[in-house]
Image 1: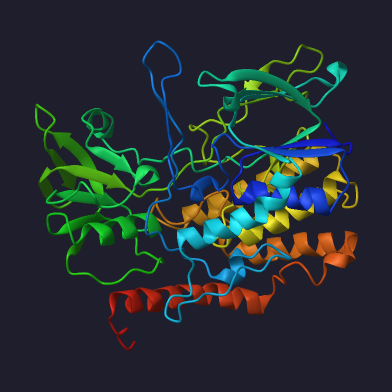
Image 2: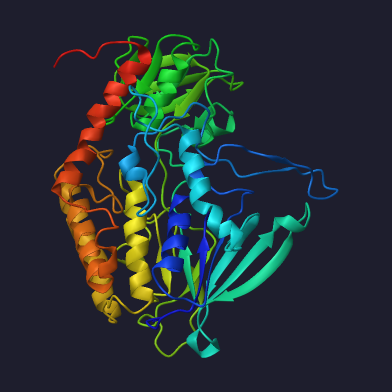
Length: 471
């Protein structure tokens, strides 16, 4: 079950979750070795902006381009510096009085500065792409077999295989673009008329185009706003619910209802978007700001003992995009794999303040793996956590007729504060020296967190040079 205390830990992913997990395991617990691997040539994860071109790998003529990210030029965040600050490392104060939200560059600079000591101590390996993580039987020594490609050695890469006592995976969400299951979408993708926010790099190339944007969360709203000055008007924004995310009213953007079907001309040159009450014809491109789904395709775990007692256990995928409700299954506290607690996920939980949440949960994990925080050793008790969450999620979803309401397994919503308070209390009991270091996670902090939406709307009006209407 992997209930012992691991000594050697590998962290996969060099984004904010991986970086803060690296710091917390190195500084808040004692392990023999902790390292982080990142497949790109710099840290940042979803905040990594520059996509670098690589020459052909071999004589096949196939090019390799570095993995893209959802970051784009001009991006301004939706989280205030207070909640972007890792404990003990305050985020620099904003320099613009009307724009308290950091730019992409400012956020990246903060992460780069945070990561610098770990480069100096060689705890981060860049250009290392993990292609397989496999659980190892205890009879064979336990732990995890990790296969990766080292791209630092040449254009074709070199295969490496390593064994680690424990693994932290932080690459759960943003590689897996989610598209709603709508009739005609598969065929539409084949025409090349579909784009996702994951690859959005700004409105260049959309001049004069007729565009439909799907969704009305942050990504969809930002794409619609950037398209409005250049694309054919109106910009259509298809939504299923009232958005809680701040955006400016714009008469160049027309909100329409849900899409029920897509079709295209015989040559695939134009798209018709079929709504419930009308059609939008002669569309050049459909842009999806519909989020992501949790999946770690390179991960394989052993079949749980309870299902195959006495037989040879096979390696099976833990995650799959067909799992419903969408989730990383069999997690305890949405961090630890219930059947083997030497596998953990930081960043699976969805929070509106992900930096602060990753800081807290990885500190809690450091306490658990160092033996300072005690958790149940019973797999059944660990799985009860998931069962209760699924039952609650089913109840909440049964009370709404809107499938796109923000009710998902990994999004805690109003349960985020009590979850964080319990985790923090366990950390402070085990590591009282962190009492004045970790974020408080109290009602006052929660009030400031919810107030960010109003602050963000004020900043959008300030950028536009407009006065916010009186309510």
